[in-house]
Length: 299
Length: 299
Image 1 (tube, rainbow over the protein chains, first blue to last red):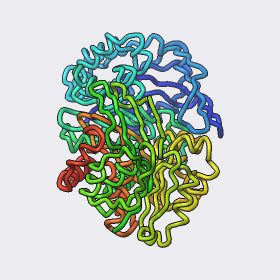
Image 2: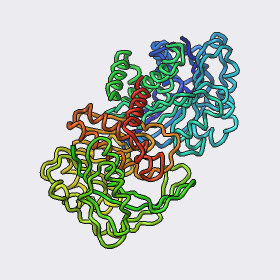
Image 3: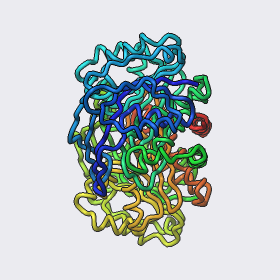
Image 4: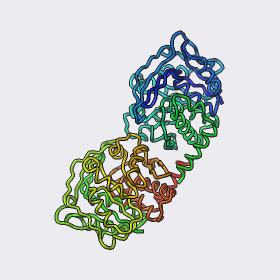
């Protein structure tokens, strides 16, 4: 099935205590579309600058990602530079150069408009609303956001939450948005705004999904060597909606499995810099880790 | 099977935004022994003052708890007073009156010394070592501690960790003890000191156990109405060692189930003030919630 993915395409510079990688392929739409590609066909809407290497586009194509919705504009590609501490839990943004992404105005190509699945990665809520209004035949939509929009554009963000089927946020965003420290309480508060499902990324504690009559919490797969956490959340979201698109339903059992696949793909994503691990990842490896988790949580 | 439990016996005053309870039965040895009693026979070592009501001793006896190791001393029983905020995640200690507990010197009765299971609740590390040296036939020992001993008596605490089979700590204690923010990393550091198993209580994120070739994380049972979180950690520890004592082994499958039972008993413990919910709790209710969790985590 087809998933429209709208979000950033970036050139990231990533520094960890062990290495530094300069201007490598990144961005929420990139991580999420490659992650979704293991399950369904992603169609990306985004913007790149004149400096964006063709090889990156070829890489996306090699993963089955459709880039008809990616516009090349005059100027440079969005550039983010960040640094991680030894424990990989905290990161510091050193540089954010929006460049062409600063004027991003997502235009959904005609052939994307009737597609049934949508992932709105973190962009300005107004743009998310514009995309939602462009889609004509949605079956399931998922949106992400970031602390900046919670702080500066909460009213519009609430409008987005009202219109989507599911929101995916990390624990600190959920707490900031609701003012509740308990995550189950916070999830309920967000669900009341409209979305059927609230998915919380809990960092090292895994992830949870709350629906009308379901609440499922799943721990992370224990990764031995975290090399670069960048994009883990977007990989998670991409795999989540990818799995739902593949099965074509939102039964409780599907949603639980989608959360497990999301955890697993994110666990691979952090094992190398940028999208390097995702690029080499196979369906067999994904299934292997799913089985390990099943074994692990079984008691 | 028989479990020796050494720790505080208290009269607690607990204030929440909804109610206040004065001088009710509490203390780590009380919560843990009642919780262990659903699985095995607890033998308590502790100290009480002259003000300690006989009805509390009768209550413990009604649960099958042996109190031959509980000494009555001149003076008042240990008194703790605490207050919870609305979200029940944070609490404030208002009063700590050690009273007879300030001179607590645990003496293991002869008939307890050959018992195979031991839970050392939070007391001074030197006293924990003394108890460990008194036990002659231990098969499995578990110890708890608190931030105060990590800050003021870490060397002796390390000696305790070297001698026990398992330690149970909460997430902030583990981070404080090791200086590591990632809990898997922190658990490994503690394991290197000696204990075969490191159990981490993660608050609303559940609990985990790490052994040589195992790492199991389990989310909390979603309690709708938390009335009083006091004693949740001790209930957890008591049920954990209780289940191990009942099965008589430390196979991986046993340890995983022990963690599940620990989670479940703790989830009941917080549903009413003090030990009120544990007092009414039935084995059938425990099994019911275990089955619910199995259903919940299955995907």
